Image (tube, rainbow, N blue to C red; front, side, top):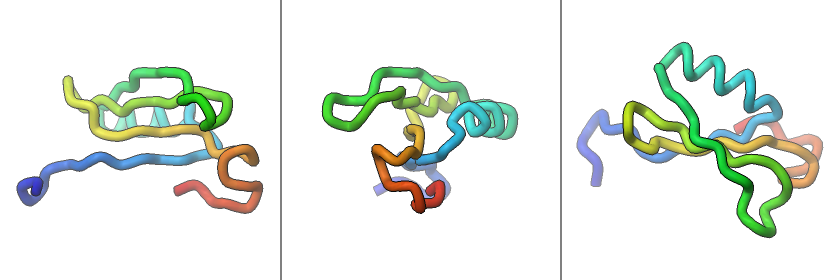
Amino acid sequence: MAEHGTFIWNELVTPDPDACRKFYGALLGWTTKEMPMPEGAGPGTYSIWVAGETDAGGMFKLDENHMGEKMPAH
């Protein structure tokens, strides 16, 4: 179990990954490592959030192939 205040893995599914990358990069100083989506997960890029040298989460594009048209960002 993580210590109180320790950041754990989170995922962001958003229709605008570029805007989120800029926002969280400026706000928290995070960067991303990009990689192709795993086979069967759909087209696109999966971004790993990097805090310093620690992988802290992931992000991918919300589109009709993943979640349907009416799903909000989460």
